[in-house]
Every structure is written in C-alpha cells, then in structure tokens.
Image (cartoon, rainbow, N blue to C red; front, side, top):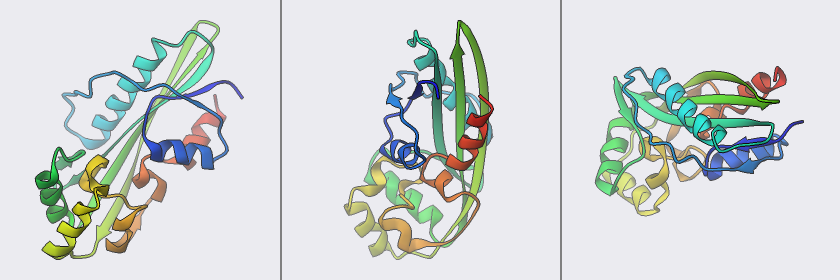
Length: 188
C-alpha cells in the first residue's frame, strides 16, 4: 500500500485509522475552515477537501491523503466545536432528548507520478440522546470532554450514557466513517 497521510490532528481519527490496520503519517492542515455552503453534507465535504488539498500542496511524494471534517446538525442549525463552556451548555441543551444528525465529510487525494485523483464523500448518522438535567450537563462540561468535539459531546467517552440510539455508522459519529473509507480506498 502507498504512503497514507492523515490531514488531521484529531486523536479520534488517528485511533480509528490505526484500529483499521493502516500505517500513516499525520500532517496537519493549515487551511482556514471557512465555507459559504449551508447544507451539512456540502459543508463537511468542502472542508474535508480544503484540508486534504492544503496537505497535498505540501506533499512531494506519491501518497494518499485523507482529509476529514465532522459537524452536528439539529433542526437546520449547525453545531461545530464549542468556543467556551456556555456554548457547550447551549449545544447540549439543544440536543438532549432529541434526535440530531452527525455528518462527516472525507476527501481522498491520490498523488501518483505527478497526477492527482480526488474522491469526496460524506456520511450521515442520526443520534438520539436521552434527556439530560441541567446538573448532568454542567457535570459533563466540567470534565472538559465536550470542548474539542462537534456538538459538544464524545459518543465514545462519558457522553455514551446519554445516547439512546444511533441509526448509521457509529464511527462516523466518532469522526471518521472507517468502513466507507476502507471501501473507497480499495479502488485507489
């Protein structure tokens, strides 16, 4: 298999790729995460492409570059990472007791002998949370876990006790739809 470069510093994405048996290098993207897209799937696809393209521009050898971006959406509102504890509290208030969507966009850029092939896709997973009390929300935020996660929660962490059900790929919610990624990479 060719060199694989993950264009992300996300510890969750690194863990998922490693669990799947991939050996890879990490080169973080310096691309600004700004888009004029409004549909969640289009947003994550464009941001994942920006990240992968920024790393591809710095890559001189043949490689497969993986860029990814994850957002949470509820009732037409996009929830990224919270900027502070107040924002985390507002996000968790809006999610508790309801079903929301998690979108992850992935862009694969294959660089080979001076040619470039780009594949972009996104996955959606519906997540239903149990109701949370104000105290539960404050206690969860106090752990610090929500602060670097889209939607202010980590399904793989302490927030697992608040997840009623999911419909779709669990790993997509963690940050990388590894099954779909594997299928797409087979054709590269």
